[in-house]
Length: 131
Image (cartoon, rainbow, N blue to C red; front, side):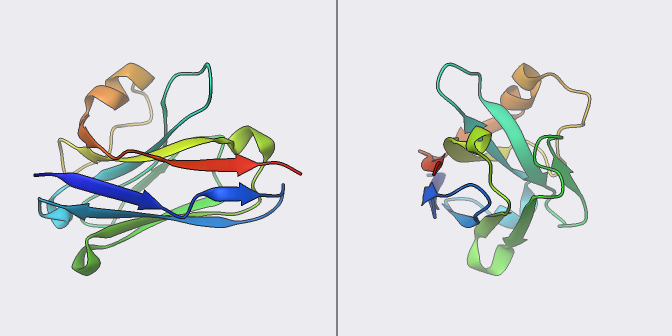
């Protein structure tokens, strides 16, 4: 059974950092792209960052480019999201999700299509950026 366990969320001041972890089980992590999504209250779930199965390509939403870094350790079945220079607008529940494919959804796809490209989701971890 495919499962994800996200951890590392919490309360942080603006400008601070957090490192999220996504521990996967039930499938071979190295065969699939993995995406971090987030959902703030009243907003749709959006893709934040994705990493391909080969670790050769990544995707970042414009809102997090230069501040967030995604990485993976297939030996540990874990994907990470390092978040620096956090802003109040980064406040959301963060989810990791397994892509149906080895590649990331392209920059031009709609948010709805990006969500459709993923078939398993974690339960999420809350990130709150506030002073």
